Length: 455
Image (cartoon, rainbow, N blue to C red; front, top):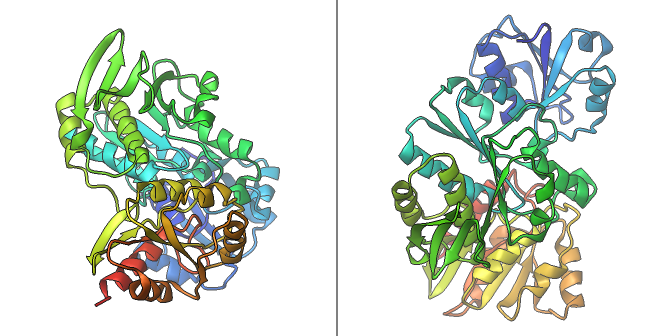
């Protein structure tokens, strides 16, 4: 496929899987990492690759790129955690070398039909639900992407009759070229990752790029209730399928008389009553409608869609019930990594709530999040880099019951001591986990560990 070596940037999970796929398919690979912390060695990388001896087709390059190295490179595959304007990435572009995402590389080996899901919030829940529906409909289904399973780990196992359901982030969409899902979905677009994309418009355009290679033979599922998504419909080349839980659209997936209904070509198809769906909150109704639309236009039958949606219990780290102790309910929403996601978690609470927030600074603003407390939040407990900024914002909006904490364990112990029967404790940080934790999963797992250790 490539006439020269492929440079894979980043020796994390994505880069390792991309390298493995290329090596499996007979390509020459240079696995590169600037290794700023000096923690990587060739032995460490070989262990990640699961081999004792370096394959002849693999070069491992730790440190700065050289012009001599780039002279023998046909393409660079960049890991999503690396900014596309990193100095070495700009050097690669200046050398005229194409830059691909791991998603783009994986897609070159894809033989089946692809559904791809993006949006600021709800991606993981929707992708997981669609994945479960499609697995029930077609046992040759792969669920990959930003959900934690690199697309490159599985796409060369695809076949003409297989289905791939992919969660796609804005970082992964920055460097796609031919990636074309049969069904795409944009769940919502609200400000996020502005430290990476700089402006909201740049970020929104990345999300919209999930549709850029589609045609009218493909489908784009879009949220009618989200204003930033709706205003971009005219830019979508695919056939647009709208969903709404607020308005009975003439065409699309809607809520009518307490049930999910598909309207198309002047006909109505009954799917299921909302009472069968087990997840809390309007945002999860949106996720349900999106999943129904995606699965339906991927070919799944209504009976399978209803059965799987009715049995679905959600995903870890998204308003995940942990336990009840002394009539205090504990919830883990570590995946609430931006203010809009955290707003949805607060809106789902039906008890007075001790809210745990703070973390890595993504240049978000917190005013709408604070305003969404709406009398539900009894105490705001803050940790991490953004703690002071959030506290200042809360006080500006008249919220004063704030505790600044050193770490998550201290927060959990404080809540255990102070929360009263009938209260809830919610970890929903509105910030990324980096700095204090490796990722949101680690943060959520530690929260659950601390909560389950309470007596």
